[in-house]
Image (cartoon, rainbow, N blue to C red):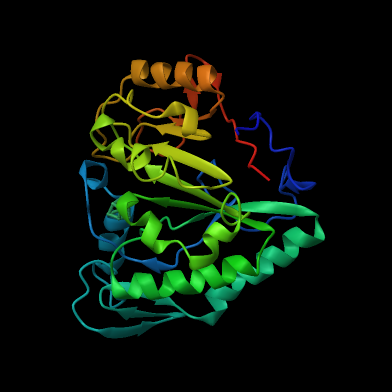
Length: 290
Ligand code: SF4
């Protein structure tokens, strides 16, 4: 059953609050719908039109250009070492200090009787069928189990792999792990099956769709199964056209079905530079199931 969503991040789960003013939170991110990001690896492979101007890919090219540092994309050598990371099979892999950030964040949140929302991964797809990503994903599940004050927002385009990538004890809980929100990226109706066929029936405290970059209309969603929708036009120099009517339509559907509506941005060079739809800001969050 859905719980009502709200425009603030008040009490969320079991008396825990979200970071609110974030006065104590030291890991800011430009992504408005989370408090921080954590990458199990850097590196991925493109799977659909939504990936065309992938930020992670563009950024990796920049990193590799004119530098001795290993870039993460298409890295051909099997191992390279940088400060705090290795590169294995084209993916950047992080050491213990990086992973232990999660324990530190959890401790900070615990002290504040709060939670923090962490998006994973912004530079990869956690469910990519790649030996290194799969290995690091197993590590993530073990950290997730010991960091209850972090709510992990796992977003994938490999929706068909969700079931096999979830840990075995996921179904021991009525709604999956209490601190994991599961989401799929759906850039248009063409890939609405990602939610409808592969996520809509999976138990989770929050099921969400990231309609970003929105590159076509999105109408064919099983709205009654959805808790949260993030909408955004494409950013960057190669951004594709975005129609406000697409956003207006999904906004109406969210209203009709009690789905939290988060309007992240218009299409613009810089991400989040115009977070208004018809002059209004919609930064709504869902209330996770207990
Ligand atoms: S799935 Fe995500 S990280 Fe991977 S190529 Fe596509 S947009 Fe980039």
